[in-house]
Length: 261
Image (cartoon, rainbow, N blue to C red):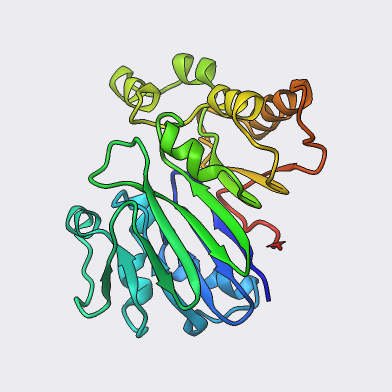
């Protein structure tokens, strides 16, 4: 039946993505509250009880704060590394915890997940490649730069959800304390619009039908800036057929459309 995804929400207040084949429904991160996650799932026509599993990228609250409350009354597995579970302080039935490791593939009801390390200031942060019926989806959020490993994992993806967190100029003159600005700008911080543009201009293989720009800062970015920067990079690139790639945005306060393959 192929693969589809919907970004339920993305930003510092909570990240969650629904991946589905029409019968099996998997949440990648639950950074929204349990109640808000359930509400947005219902907007997609899916009752919370139909969720088959949760996969968690890392322990920061905007990616996992809702995991425990959401999974509390559901008999579903939660896939995450030991370091992520330990660092999160999450209250989770040990029988539900399915241990994963960076670089190792694992099966989630017929979806093949491969976690890969991303450069971020958490215990064991992962991006994911998800494969089903010869369709490949890449998710890379919360990373300070696009390492060679990340670039390799994003090759051949039919759809990509990629962080475009901040505009460097807005961040530098914005309201954050200097220490927080340094953290965001560091190689273990968050990806800028400029970094995304560099990826699209130099390293993107042109395979993806959709690239969804996600985790936009509400204080240090503007949707139109992120989209314009990325669009210019694609338009200015030569020697690559990228006309079939659509750039779109994920938002904090509403679900995205469904991307189907």
